[in-house]
Image 1 (cartoon, helix red, strand yellow):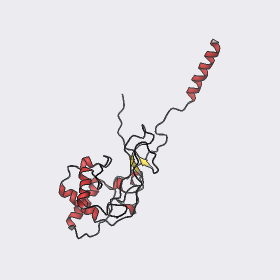
Image 2 (spheres, one colour):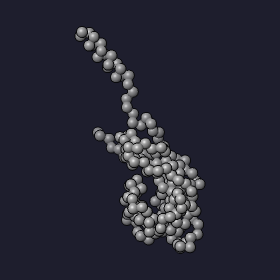
Image 3 (cartoon, one colour):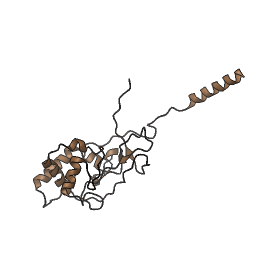
Image 4 (cartoon, helix red, strand yellow):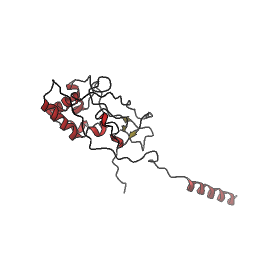
Length: 199
C-alpha cells in the first residue's frame, strides 16, 4: 500500500513538472506603436480665423492626438488616409492580464464626418470633451482619453483645438463599439500598463 501511494505521488509530481507554466502574455505580441504622427491639413472655415485653426493644428500635433485617433497607429502601421479618423484597434481600460475579457475603448473619429465623426458636435461640446471628458450625450469618458491632463488647458487653446477639428476634411470611418468589462471584444485591442516589481 505504501509503495502504491509513493508511486502515485511520484506520478503526480512528474505530471505537474510537465505542465507548461502559466504565461499571461501568451496571447499577446509586443508592438511598436507610432507616436510621432502628422496631423491633416485643415480646410478654410469661415467660422474661425486662420490663426485659430493654425494654433489648434499646432496643439493637436503637440498633444499627440493622432497616435491614438489614427487608424493603425497603435499597432505601428498608421493609415495616412485616416489621420484623426479613429482607430479599429482599441485600448483596454481594465487589465487583460487579470480580466480575460477587459473593457476596451476604441478611439473616436475626430473628423467632422456627420455619421461617423464629430460633424454633429458643436464647438462648446468639443471643448467640454477636451476639458472635462464629458461627451455630447453627457457620458463621462474613461481616462484612457487623457482629459484629466487636459482639464487645465486654457479656454482659448481648447477653442482653437475645436476650431481645427471642425475645419478638417471629413473622413468616413466607423470605429468599433466600445466593450464593457466582461464582454468579449470583436476587434483587436492593446493595453498600456505600468508595473512595479514586488521585490
